[in-house]
Image 1: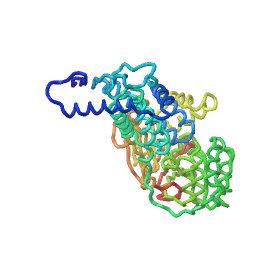
Image 2: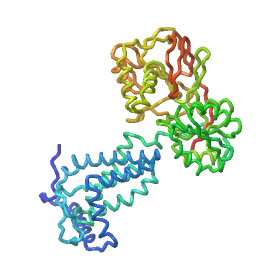
Image 3: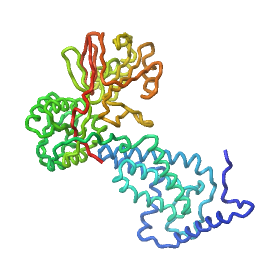
Image 4: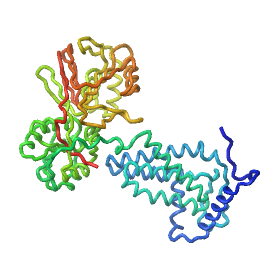
Length: 495
């Protein structure tokens, strides 16, 4: 490790450039101290204190997330992650790499002084780094929220010079480090804009400026009231129908008879039902996310009523692939995933307990109960050979792992089924974990994957549970899974 740089001790030899920069820095500090800053006296010292230990930014993140829009929540989380990385870098490397004393307070009016003077070294400014990291992180996810936060972040950074606790170069270096931390977080966890699917293939869909001709059916159990109010503001002439879960399919079927475009608000299971009816009637589908995960809507880059409202008004739409499975007399479609093995059992176990102890505790309990079971893994015949499996996953289009993020699709019309297999054997929890860590583009002894357009399975035991888009049914004997390329037209906001 290189030794610390101590700016308090003159080094032998001539350092003309360094001396000039330090002299300029000191002169700028004195100019700032002598200058009258209108309206700053009652604001900047308090603002500077409020940013101690990141309190201001945690409160700001809570306020942004409280707006309850997906983009705002992601922006708040990204801002805090960027702040954490910047603070870690400042405290482990920044403050220890350059030892620089704080400025003398003599030129600074006493009314500006902080009640408690910092005792750490001056270079770089931790407050400026935190402010820049939070603002840049928010802006990378949501430019609108970034523009709202930026003036506050700038004021916090300037308050450090105003109160006399930092030289201007400390603030500039801290701000640069904070912005760098935000971009480093983006490299590890890409923003939604980076991972959105390409706008292809574009499809012809009716442009409905006021929403006339669009009938939207909402699953009331998904807590759709707020989302429907936003959609009504965006498309005041659209017909909005809210119903109970058991009525969703009937209402969708009735809506399809009078609609130019079919809309749906709910989770992935509700969207699946709407897609099946839209396919049958040849209608474009407008999806308003209203469930817990909303995989299909998010992979379409549809986040809320504003984004889907714009797409419907402008007639912006694309064609997407649909997966279809057939087993005996049972036929169904899936927009996201289909699976056999432990996952369908986990879903059923979770539904047994969710209404008693809540969704997340039920999820944890279901995982523990399923993985501790003594039952043998799933037995299926694949390409003429019998395979013991813990899990068979089939994705509608290729799922990618991007950096540290979970799998997402960047192309919803690639014509492929993404097939993943976790082989049977002892220690199912370890096998599933190793398969998850292996990722989609690597192989492990417990994990295999393939890209096909059609899949045929035989030898499925009677009553084997099948999960598709969050729904569970039973299959037996033989099952065929195939692609319907570019079969469904969906509205989505285009760049």
